Amino acid sequence: MWKEFKEFALKGNVLDMAVGIIIGAAFTTVVKSLVDDVIMPPIGLALGDVQFQDMFLQLKAGDPAGPHATLAAAREAGAVVIGYGSLVNNVVTFLIVAFVVFLIVKMFNRVRRQWEGESPEEPATRSCPHCLSTIPLKASRCAHCTSELAPVT
Image (cartoon, rainbow, N blue to C red; front, side):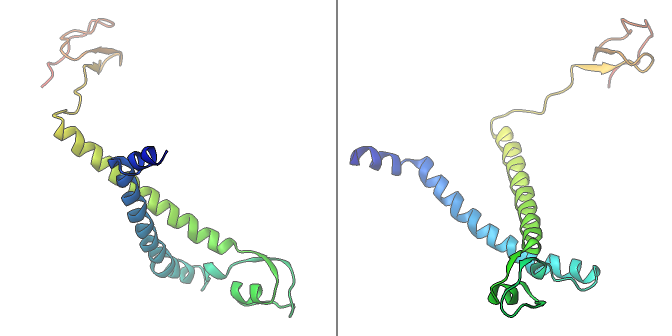
């Protein structure tokens, strides 16, 4: 069993995955700071000096009962709260991370296709400008409406 575990742990894919997780966690921390410290403050200011991290719904009062100015003060008083402002920050963070990962994967796939010698597929058909039916790219006459077509350049 130890030998099987050692083979599994030392495979290149496991190491690559571990490096990816570590870099992803560090990247998420940077994006979280970007959202919390750079993006959300101007949005909150534009919405009337709203602090998103301090937006909450109080379900049960604490001691002292409040009202509490911040989420931290409400939690310190023992109030039961739903911190929906933190959720907004986390959703924005997630969307930014997801978009950046999408861009990275898209770029990686494009580079991989170039390395493998693949070229973007050229269309084999076109639309007839008269009847809008699909015809072969090199056709000089539409098979549906019999219109003469200009050659494809």
